[in-house]
Image (cartoon, rainbow over all chains, first blue to last red; front, side, top):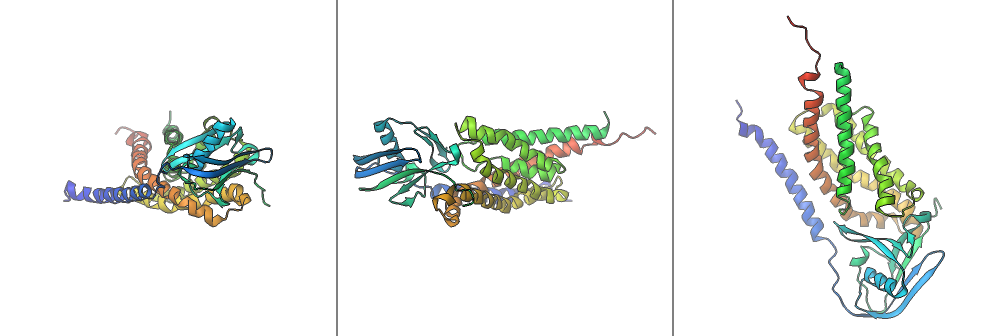
Length: 146
Length: 197
């Protein structure tokens, strides 16, 4: 007759397998998260925020807000417009939802950022900028089958 | 109340429990992208309940979540603008529940069934993410000149989190709902009464 322990072994093995797979995934995700950007002074950076209806420019500044998101918030403060965003914990980062009243999804447009013409590959608060960088926030319109 | 009506009511209660799991779990885990309970609720709807619950449970969850997600929580998202992406999300979860439905005959109160659901959740998670990525690329990234390859590349960390979510929630809630189903739908009290000798 099987003992209770021998009947429990498959459950224990399964539990250990799932736990180790989950643990490995979690470890990998945490280790590969983009690191926080250390504050550094950058100079001559420009941010352009563009929708089909209006454009905002904040040009040639020197700042210690050396991330795309930090520069956006600084320009919002200086040019007096609102930015709304979501904070995510995993993966850690912000998602910008609205700039100056233009909100993601409105008329089918969505906010995206580019640094020196290169599409942003990470959360805006994890993207470091350097001297002379041009940051563009664009409010794109889907072409819908075009 | 006859036995079949009793079974139907209990199945409905289980379905409502799955809807609650999907909605409340998603809302509670909002800060964790792709760490969610809609997937496991859809999978269990197909694999444990089957029948029209396969479609009704994921759709009910999304009917609550999608408008909530895009208006009250994300403040100002235009519902009509999200219709395209919502189509991919809805059909993606329907695909997951149908995947669960395919294995329903093999799901019994055994560890092997939980293992089967957990194993099945891995390719289903990847397939779901690929499908919704296609929607995100078509409606958001493509007009900006961003390639599908770039979108898929950027999806990788999110899919890893989604896999983690499946590995945690499928065995956890799969076991719980399997036990509930066994005790609520398959217990002796739902079997026909026998006449006394």
